[in-house]
Image 1 (cartoon, helix red, strand yellow):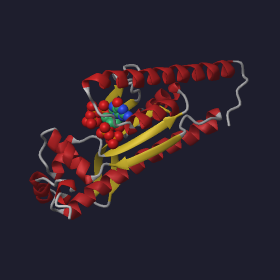
Image 2 (spheres, rainbow, N blue to C red):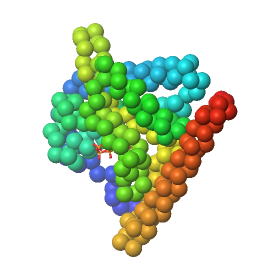
Image 3 (cartoon, helix red, strand yellow):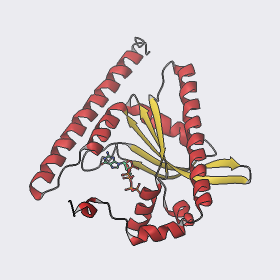
Image 4 (cartoon, protein in one colour):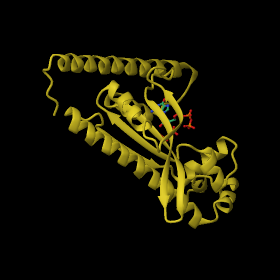
Length: 229
Ligand code: 0O2
């Protein structure tokens, strides 16, 4: 008989159980998650409208696709705890800016800035933070434009401003970020620098390719030879 079976079970720590008390009002927790879902819908609709309008005006789409997600309760709890914030519903709204996340994938690098500028120009959008990891890539080569915006949602009881994190990157940058996210390597002193160096090299090659693709598009556009599908 395997007496070690309990060792294989994940540990649920006391703090997590206590947090059930802080999040005890399940109905309120669900309501707040619903607000985040509404905020995501507002932002997605704005982006979809911009994409359609851009297509009507310039015969091409600056957005290839849009993904969105709401952070799950365990990740919310872990992040509050890691950062030393109170484990309360108010604390989620006050301290976390990525509970609602929207990822926008663009064909070309300049589309990223076009989309960001069109979104933040809207008078019901307030930019809280803007981090340009394209102009200033992370040491591992990660590139993306990150915005945290505040958007109003209109509920039966009134209006509420909600924070949404918007990550905007090219198809190629997304390819790198998705695979890098999946690569979980055992970090030892010997391999860590080598793995990071290889990943950074891949990110740089991808960025060069992105830049070349954009140059090709712009040249064809300037010559009036561009037909985008
Ligand atoms: P998930 O599941 O994607 O949400 P914070 O946003 O508060 O956590 P910080 O430093 O302000 O902290 O965040 P930052 O660096 O602006 O953005 C964090 C998010 O960007 C991450 O979310 C990832 O989605 C993405 N990201 C940042 N750096 C990397 C990276 O090196 N590789 C990849 N693949 N993605 C990255 P989460 O919370 O990690 O996860």
